[in-house]
Picture (cartoon, helix red, strand yellow):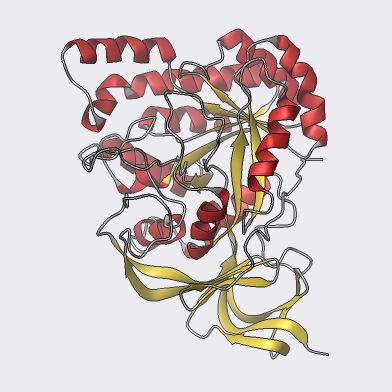
Length: 440
C-alpha cells in the first residue's frame, strides 16, 4: 500500500548526519525513511536538501494589546505565518503579554483568539510576566497546565522590566513547574544614564545605539540573570545575545554545569553597527559579531531565532526593527555554512532541532518516523535577492534589501500538508494549531 506522500532522492540533512534516502509521510506524521518507497504523490528532491521544518522561537506578530509608546507590529498571524512558511519555517513561538494587574489566563485566552483560525503554521506561546506583584505567580500552575512551560522576563524597558527580587521569585516559580526562564538581559539603570547623556548631546538614531547600551552593561546583566537562575534552580535562556561579553558569560555558565542557553538573532549575524538597522540590544561592531558566530560554532550559543518585530514606517527614512521571519534559514545557510563557519548539520541543529528540544516541542525538529511531518526541501543552488517585492511580509521595507543568498527553501510541508510549492502558497489559511508543550 503506497504512502500518502513520498519525497524521493533527496539528501537528508539532520543535526547529526547526512545521507541519501526517501521520506514517506502518512497522514500528519513521518511514516518511514528508506529507499524505493512509493506514494500516492511522489516529489523528486534530486539535488535538494531535505531537512526538518525550521522552528522560530522568538517572533512578535500583531498584538492589539501592545501598550504605547510601542508601535503595533505590521504582520498579523495570518500574514506573518504565511511569510514564515515561504522561509522554511513550520512552527513559530509568539508571546502572551498581560498588562500589570491582568490575569495571565485572561491574557492567554485573548492571545489564542488572535492566532486560532489565522496562523497557517503550528504555533506556541511564551508567557511574558510584566507584573512584579507576587500574586501573579499563583497563576503559573494554571499557565503550565495550558501547555506553556516557557516564561519571558525583561530586565529593562519601562512597563516590562522586573526588579531583581521579582525576577528571582518568578524564576523560582518557573523552576517549581519544571519550566524554562527566558531573559532579555540589559542593565536598565546604566542604559538610562547613557541615553540621558546622548540625548543631552543631541545624539539619537540607530547609529548611536551601541553608545546608549554598552556591551559591558549587557555582559553584566547576563551574568546577573545567570546568577539568579542558578540560585533559583531554573533552566535559563538568554535572548538575542549581542556582545562578546554575553557569549563569554554563557560559555562560563555552561562550563560550570549550569543549564544555561543562548540565542543569536539573524540581524546581529548579518549586520554590524555601520548599518542603519535598529534592534534592542543594539547591533554592535564586527568584533562582537565574530564572537556570536564563534559562539554558535563552539556551542556557547544554542539557537538562531529572529525577534521578528518590525512595524511599518511613518517616514521613508525611518528604521523600525528587523524583519527576518522569512529570511532566517537561508541567511544562516549563506553566512554560516557557505562561509565555512559551521557544517550543514550544525545549521539544521541551530535552526530546527535544538529549538524543538529547548522549547519542549517533543514531536518536531527531527526526520524520524513518528514525528510530525514538518519537512522542508531546500535548494542549495537557487539564488534569491531580497526585496519587499519578493518577500511576503506586510512590512513596507526589507531589512535585507539587496542581499543575495545562494540556497533557499523551495517546498515547505507542515504535518504532511504542502504549504509552499513552486513559489506559491498552496496550503489552507488558518490551518495551524496551538501546540501544548511540557518538559516532563
